[in-house]
Image (cartoon, rainbow, N blue to C red):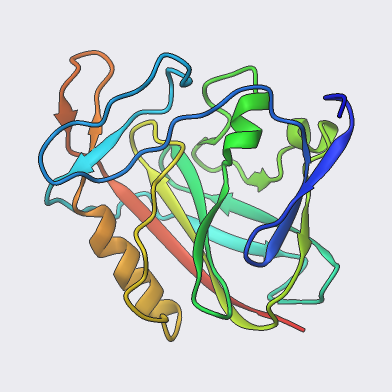
Amino acid sequence: MPSSQPIRQERPWLAFLLLLAGSGAASAAPLPSASLHVGTTYAPWLWPVQATRRQANTASVSLQILPGQTVNLGGKVSFGVTARKPGYLILVDVDAEGRMSQIFPTPELLAQSDGRDINLVKPGVEFVVPTPAARQRGFEYAVSPPTGSAVMIAILSERRVQLLDLPDLPRKLQDQAEALSYLSAWTSELRVLDNGSGKLVTNNWSFDVKSYTIK
């Protein structure tokens, strides 16, 4: 398929209309001892992540689901995020069946991007997902099954992080407080590779969570 034509890629509840990705992307994941390795085909700005103990939540990140927190199958949605401090945004969805997935940024979107900072949120400035540049490339979010109650979590990283290898959930999360507690505890175990020093360093993570309903 020509790269100028959109293709549809399914997510647990959010379906993307995406341009055909032209290259691979690296993901970040916690490991018990050794650093992750980034292959030569990976984008250099996708830093690996490794486990350690630390947690902070200081950026006052705020998430809004647009047009509202009740959405209909087939409808289009977007997300507005603001923060008191700069950081790199990751959106994680926990669908009505308890499946967790990162919906922004995605490997497809990163492959189509010309810059390193497509998920950089500036202080006091609303960051809308999908971004205007992504919309021009044909990216959008359309609601798909399962119906029911779900949770969207905005994670703001102080250091540049764009992909997380999310853990498997041991059980279905019951509500937004439990989802936030789970991801907050998990990210507190992560360290981020500092590009300047090449060392794994501590990181500050901030969160906001919103419940929503799919009808």
